[in-house]
Length: 315
Image (tube, rainbow, N blue to C red):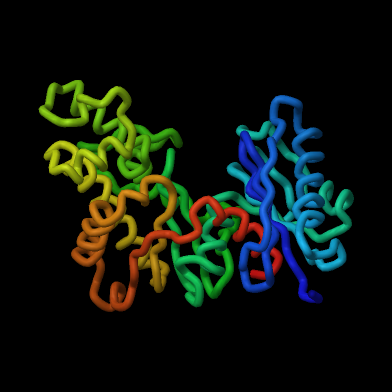
């Protein structure tokens, strides 16, 4: 085996997931270990370096074949200078992670935020394989996004492009304040947090719904109730889907992507979510801008971050 391989790290608050990838984006071997946040940034960095070495050592590939290392992190990153500006979940602030890891590993290193690397992973070898221009939505606690143009991440002037969750799509009379401080953000209605909030409000109003029987209200609770025909749950799901489709119509008018790829825990709801998203997109998007555009679920799941981080070295 003489081909080059690449390591991608998904840096989370609890665990660091490390994957060894081929030049075509195939995940060859993985390793997962504790982040070590409670022991401080130096421990986290030491763990990152150790896990990179370990994932290579456990594979059939040699250290000499490792051509580079990428890392994705939830937080604000200075991609150009390789600095994690602020990542509260791992306790990093203004950490020059690229320079530190390059010194410790003797390999080139690149970083980006987690939503961007997940988008790149899907574009490289997931639901967007073979597509040059796509936009990825990650529906979880919030709504994250990543933009791929000509096969590469589009980062914007300050590296913050793709903040799809903060597109203002909710009318003023229905809008609530978002965690960002503004009102009307997509994230307030189409994230797991938003869906749970709307469900709890319905229960508190005394509406008749299966949701009120749940010991704990989760996004899955709402989707399961909707699939069972619960009118309140269906209304909540359709509202979340409406604003997702509305945001996609706006994005399509600006970027004209070939595909919208939707990942994250909420996306596992299936057709009950995807069908109304597609219907809204078709209603609100001019025909030339929607022609041939697909709205599809992500394929890589929890591996997208590792694959995409590895892909930073190539794409």
